[in-house]
Length: 286
Image (cartoon, rainbow, N blue to C red; front, side, top):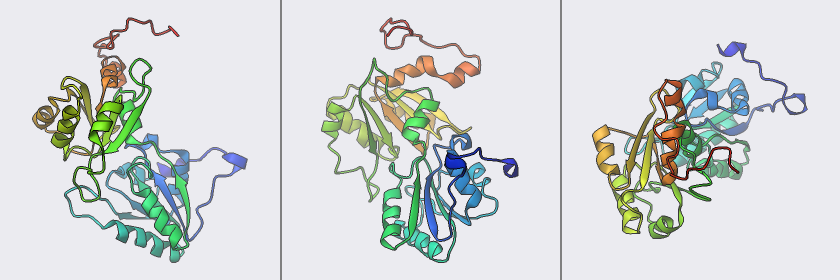
């Protein structure tokens, strides 16, 4: 399968070379191997060792049959390697002259600790290259038929994490300001504290009937999408038996899934509502 892959001619007719002693920090996208970038595939084909996270699909690692695969996943509530140990392992491998690929789910610089790892590497004199990836908070929602921006709904979107370094609900976040200023809110890693988050948003004035989508295992064959409301979110998540990894989207853009569920359409389902926002504007209007 992977042996037949031939990358097209890149810039200047050549793709970048992963040199010995370098570490490339690379985003693996939201899950579907087809959402890798070509630079990510190029990196996978060259690496001596791939240090990968919990959200990286096994099929993605198949692109690097020549490399050693080292698991370094961190999942909330489960035993996992300490971040400092992971960062220093990257330093050690680079100093051994390995071609090191650090593969992280989504984008390495979006709630992925990639900035911390790159900082440690540079502080230890290790050369790095950053390869962005499609973040689940954008690509995962799009796959579920939910645009994070829609001109009839929002001119801004706010991305937040559902837990801080200690694993608790972030105390540094001003939930009142977020509730008042975020037209659409995308929450990463929020399942563990969903009750506190939904309560904080409603206490700050967000309506209980505001649309919410919960997208689990986005873009994979295990994807589950729950459409609910801010007030019913906790009860509905529990009733559906949903578990992380998940992205939470709060806002009226969730309503667009009623017409933009492209996977349902491909399976022969009819749109539930061609005008979910009730604007009555033809699609071709400017």
